[in-house]
Length: 359
Length: 223
Image 1 (cartoon, chains in turn brown, orange):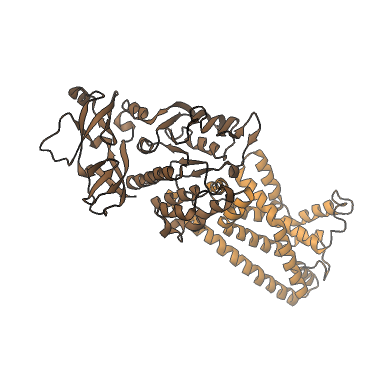
Image 2 (cartoon, helix red, strand yellow):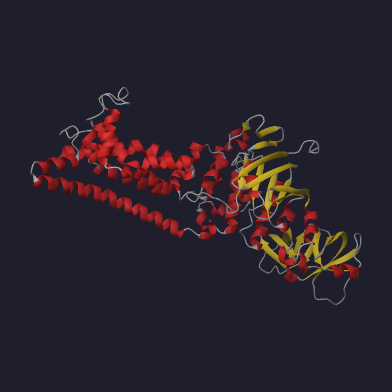
């Protein structure tokens, strides 16, 4: 959008008191995917509840484009059903007494016909849930449930999708799969998203920018890679592992194609052409300054160091090797190799370090 | 005997239907609010549980009586079958509210919000989500209301009297038979009471146990 610099897509600045907890936040989000990051209890869910009209702030404003959804000064409060900011909950919140089809059609039918721009049949096909349509939510797996929840919200053709830790209750394989679907959904339907998470890995895969919340206040707003850099200053025990998450395809030779590169992975259970979600832990990747000879790792990719962040407890290198890799190193290793931004390096990882999941 | 039985059934049905929406509104209010006002509302609607039904009937007679505060609105209401329904409804109300609260407690408020978020009005979300999910508790409450209304005697006899063919339901008819020394007549009416009340109560208990089973089977990790 040409004018997105002057006019943020989502603009909010409000305060709300809930018992002993006070949320006092402001933000101006562009119309892509923006993450909200922070520990539990930071106020992430309260922020989303306000953006969805579930909680009315005590004062301030919430605007989408030029439309005011909430303004204490002008005494405006849109009803939740008028907000059209569709929420995807952590545990799906599918209606247990309705089938998958009825769940998805529920919001679609309540959407005024002139605002329906997304075809639910096409959507269920895209999210690969057509085979689940006649089932009840209780019989779905965690990953299926979240895809149905995503479909139910997207089917209302919302102007903003609010994602409240939608992958937090899933294991790593399913997490990658659902993150991959979220990314593709955003690309296909062009719906702006606010993605709430306490995991940097999925934020890194989805959002260029993040608002960091701490104890009810906005601590920072900026590029997600800066947050990874901050993690170098935390002890390993005090933080999550960073996972590099990608969407890929299985090639005819059993390799996995990610963007412009191909990597070797254990793809025996997958067919050529199949879409997969790929994850590689930042701590499973090594860097070398020269092409190693005689080494067992099957993946040796040439790349360029974009950025190095050294903290008290760890260091992270951001390497462009056709796709961006975050590599976790020790301070000592950075010093020993004298690593600097701009260095040519080789990115090394074992076939078994790659986790792939059908997407 | 048939007259009294049919009158009791009619009275109990009207009382149950009449109090269903107010009881739902009160239950819905009580489950969402915990403050001082909620405490007082709960106390007021629960009072009939703590009072002798005769006293409830006496208060109603005063409220609706010829010189009572509500007299202009409800002239000639006392000593009619409508008075029987009102007396039964007031006495049963706290039981119905309690059963509704138990049913509504089963419904995750986030599901109701999810419906609002998808475009449903408050009424639509109540109809589509709250009521179906609380159906066992709602049905149990309605049956309990019917059972209690059907059995109501103390408030009724004071407020509606005991006029054969007019305001003489099954309990009052039993009372009259006993007073007249007609024990076999009293026994046959008591048998009808046992049959109708027993069936309704059995269905009610079935619904409550189904509701308990549903709560127990709920996966804790889904909460």
